[in-house]
Image (cartoon, rainbow, N blue to C red; front, side, top):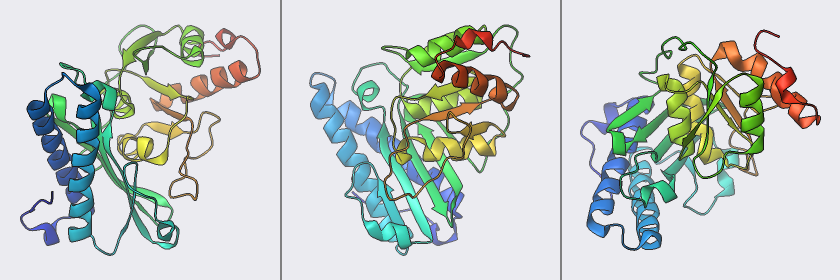
Length: 268
């Protein structure tokens, strides 16, 4: 499952990331259409495998000197000595992908170079939309009322509901990490707060895009997000409008200290 990209040698890393995310997204839509939804587990497996095969083959062809870290491939420790590492999630939101009518799943393609995320693309194939560092722009002004926090559509974590209450905000249920981060980038939500466990591939591309759009991105204690680490576990994440960052971090700190997060009101 390889792809041919016209003028690939002339594409920048950012352009290649977009093309790869979009091509993988189209492959996933085709897999969805051909398999149907009668067997969700088989559909999820086919989606993971098909997208991984496409992305892996394309990166080997068009960026053969670079290392790759992927959720769906065996980790090669050689990446820790590499200057350039592509961090990919071939299918973010497998549960949503396997449910008919859902669009809140994504493909993540990011490039880490010399200690920093330098480019990223998040494709939302169900929406026919791709967000990238090449075209990211700040979200529109926040609407009146409290901030909107995105959370798991099946069960919003207590941390998120408590912080939402602290900020006088609301919780918006949504699927994959890429969809949640993209909602903040697009101005459909204001905060993506997660502390339930993730890996580098879950957040690398969304964080790259969010930073390019001028948003705040950090660990939930405010420390930097670091990628291409020996252990790819990166268990927590905050992406939000920059004007909300201090309030969210303060509310999280109070929650973790066992104090009512609601004491940290906006403006306080």
